[in-house]
Length: 407
Image (cartoon, rainbow, N blue to C red; front, side, top):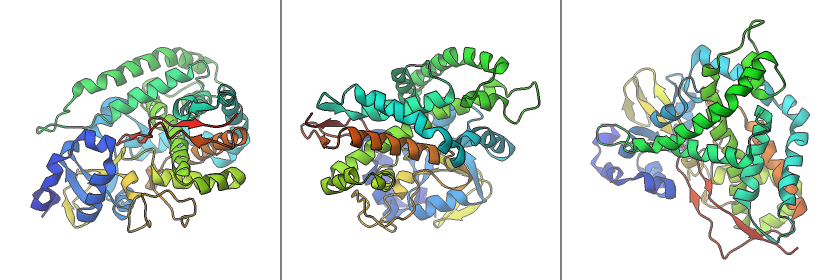
């Protein structure tokens, strides 16, 4: 018997996208307890919700990567997160050299620290700020934008692009016929892509003739025969992936870490007093609220049984890493931020051969940004007059974070 035939899971018919975007934890807590692999009608897909099942599907030779329908509609083909075999190997070989630890160590401090200081100078004497919009997201997008070669694109425009692409990518609700319930929801993603093309096409024209050390220039040239470059249509889907996931992940990761620390003032004080604790604080923040919450998928390549559910060949499964990171079978009191939690591995960056290529880069962007923040404003406090709202099912983070301090 599959989960779609189980009467005790009829409650899943009532789950809505609004519910998942505002507070997915309640739905996924019940899924983990009742059906770690279940068909969720509003998503039109099976969903893996526990750490064990997510890791099993992500690493199984009986599954390969597939992009969600909304993701495919947003990014196009071949997006690095949804391809396999030679294409995936080529795309990884294209993006990974600049993200290797030894390479990142060479330039990460010189890249990120001046950016962080520049944004801090804009508000550090004000005594108040909204850190998501004024610091976390701008530092994140500026760091990656400069790495890609988009120095002339305004940070607010980069933030606008990733927000529009995010809403398009997570426009995943389907109707009873399996069609997109809100096809108009892709319009702003299409608008963002048109703007991206208008900016990046002239840069690609220049990089083809005059390569430089920017990441996209390397994507065009590296590994190609002399005089040849990769076709721009081949790399654009991965550019869109970067302008969404790779830009939002460090920004929302550090914002979530700050919210978590504010919930434990004594732990915030520890981290401010000892910056060596910042990487540990970030790791717990990523587990506590995973920036990429449920945005990746796999598809079975043959009939397979997972968590007692028989899946025919060609069955897609969404991997809810944010849910896996709240699995009570793995973490004690997972909804509580705890800097001193035993250092167990989490799935915020995925698993298997499609694990995030930018783990090292993202962690160091967050580390440096928080080092600079706590150095400049060690007496930071959350402004309790303002609430903190998290939003998102595919990608998740605080929508705002108001803070105060004595100047």
